[in-house]
Image (cartoon, rainbow, N blue to C red; front, side, top):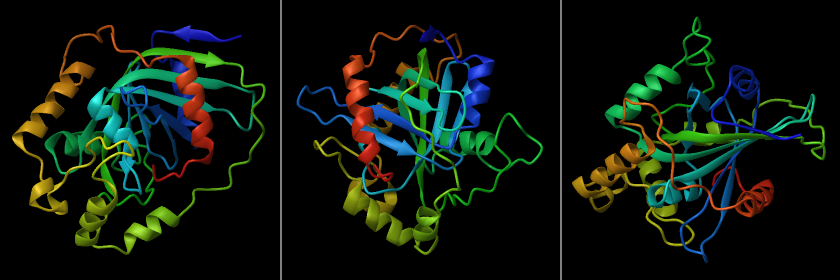
Amino acid sequence: MGKTYDSINDSLAAWIRKQHLFFCATAPMSAEGTVNTSPKGYDSFRILNPNRVCYLDLTGSGNETLSHLQENGRITFLFMEFEKAPRILRLFGQGHFVRVDTPEFEELYRDRFEPKPDDDEGASGKDFGLDRASQIRGIIVADIHKVATSCGWGIPYYEFKGERPTLKNFWGKRTREELGQFWRMANTESLDGLPGFRHELMGPEFAPTEETESKARRAKTKSGWLSSGPLQTMSLVLGSSALVAAGFSAGIAASVFL
């Protein structure tokens, strides 16, 4: 029997930290736009508090999630149990992007992702080989306004055998200049033409401007990132369960780079 919650309780948080895979679903505002679901691996997900989460956004061949968040902020996370008692968990939220090489990124990365062997609640203490100088685009932060569980009885068993090293190995051999060239080639816009990633390494025309930084600040304020008060009720909710279902189905076949 499915249940809904207003926040992530301790039991669900402990379960989330044990998962090796999650999906995030986003979509543009246009009814003709492309719904996207991206699978995510590595030790990249963090619970900041019962109503706020984040994960490392790694460089890949697309940036649908980033583009959609910059337009409307809607995001849903999906976790599944593959090895033990069945469970599906969805986190519904409003998110924004924290770009690498900004003060916000440095603070959040240092507090939550840099290896800290004696810290079980902050960074994992694991050296997962994600060199931020060569492959991390930023951090996706999301304020969660609804948590939902469902049975997961139809999900098959899968055994976790280890992380795939291909992404780390690929970017470990590239320079910063090559990274900027790749961002310019593959990350400037979404499949529907929405603005994508921006960074100085991509060239002067792609360097963040006061206008783009202002938009980013407004997105952070809207999602609650700059608010010191309690999480406010979100008025913009991910449209319907059909959107999540369609996104998840697409994500099974999607590249991890999206």
